[in-house]
Amino acid sequence: MINELNKSKAQIERKTFTMSGFRFVLKLKHMPKFQIQKLAFNSLNDWIELQGNIVKGFLKSEYTIKIDVSQINRILNAIQSINPNQSIYDFYSSHTQNEYSEYRFDFDKLEGRELSFSELKDQASFDALRMIRA
Image 1 (spheres, rainbow, N blue to C red):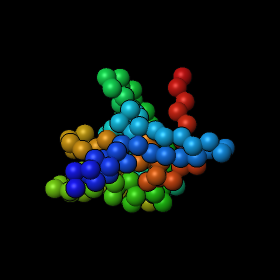
Image 2: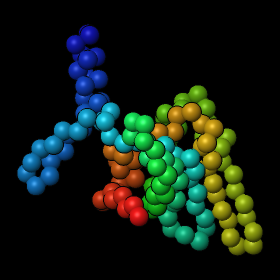
Image 3: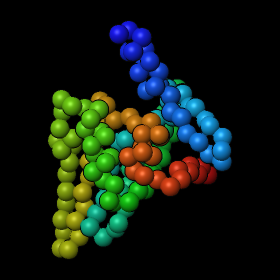
Image 4: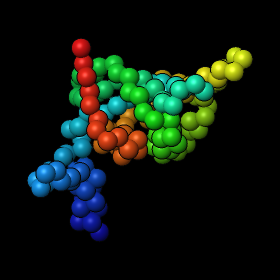
């Protein structure tokens, strides 16, 4: 039983993928995580804006990621699964003016809001995740 637990823990901590015929194994605990602070979208755009920090060890950088609005439920479900005892809709607010509506989740006070980039890529179904820094 203990060996099975250690084996499943090792599978969780590693992700294997194949590219150009080569097999790669990533240790997920060493991958950067995206700490979501705000998730915002509106009725006029077809994308969601994720604002937060990329955290790797002691380093932290602010970033904004834009994803397709069709992926919102996947992201919200991933955040909800990290926080099973608290509803993410407690952090939801909306504002409507004429024909324009703005929706926002403010996760600053939510404890579990970190997703690894592999989880974020799986949830948001990115074709290629690129970070551009000026």
